[in-house]
Length: 511
Image (tube, helix red, strand yellow):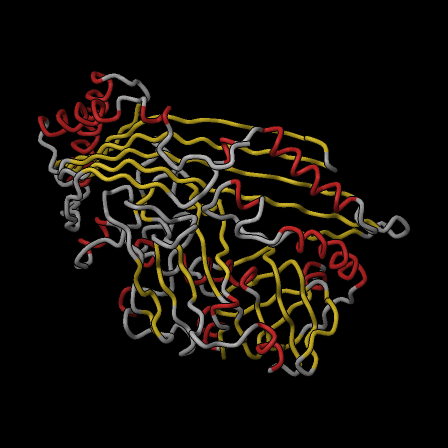
């Protein structure tokens, strides 16, 4: 394995005729009368290494390469994609995009609509290059080194008392994008992200009862160094996991009722994703996602007035944070990425938006939220890194717990359910610890917390300080038809919530 791997752009990607293809496509779109045109070429390498009980159980390594042309012509969108890496091929794809826009304009006119696609203004940035923050590209590391490390970690867990099986997985992605538009912006970008995960299973041979416990390390916009010392304490986590799993196996089932909760960021990030991240996507709030993944209770008429949560609640949208999964230099519409407020002292003050939605509703500019997961798909308004901010001088997790007489400390994400308006929800987790008189008093099982979004965030009495902050996230946020996936991070501190409904999942499933 190399000591360091260059963060320079991938040579295989740079060897493609990026500018020539873009020039041919954009010239053809201009000649056919497009008001706007953009060209996007992507090369995405996606790989997984899977082990079962310290032995290789599967490996997949795929690369997808293609390009797309999107235009605004006759007041309508047009889009087409191709894989033929020739100037003639790129020009034909541009002509197909224009033909699609013309057809769409006719259909829209026949339907009696006078709505026209217009884009919010964005400066031209000329030629720009951006590479994400990592030290060692995981694709520069030999596959044998990856499987050896996962096998060593798996064997370490299997050697502990009470661990019956161990599943290990490493997922790595390198995403290269070249973008050019008729306004003069031309960006070449490279993102690397990685997700290591181990799950230990315990089985009681006498009763057949079993349970699992998963590592808490979140996916991150990092490289191989994430597994070898930078960004996560793997030794401590692997040492603690068997004992925690044994305690979970012996833990009593929770008694349903109302409890105070201290929620660790390893769990709270997912609640942020579902109840704030999706709810503040402006296209969703306007009803554009109604047919698939629902709308949002946080409608545009509530901007500046909706009491989303308590005064301790400050949430930002951010496409720039270091190691964020949704972090990029420029989005798929040539917009320079940025950070902005979504919720300020508990009040809804902003949305996530792309150029078309921003112009449609009178905002000055997009905040850089357009993204497509491949060249075959049109860019959509997608989620930024949506994060709950810590209190500058806030308490640590132990201090939050000390203020609870009867409650539960929730750690790690589990299953979830939320309604079509991102309002009524239920979340489980990985680990639950009973809190009695300000101290942890052993684990519980079968816990789920339930609330409405505004009641839940309104009950947040305190947030922890920066020392409790963690950037969690997911590789697999789904949206749109046809479906697309996007990786996104959510940072948050530990937080204290008062008087939350707790369900027993075993009793609920038995109804």
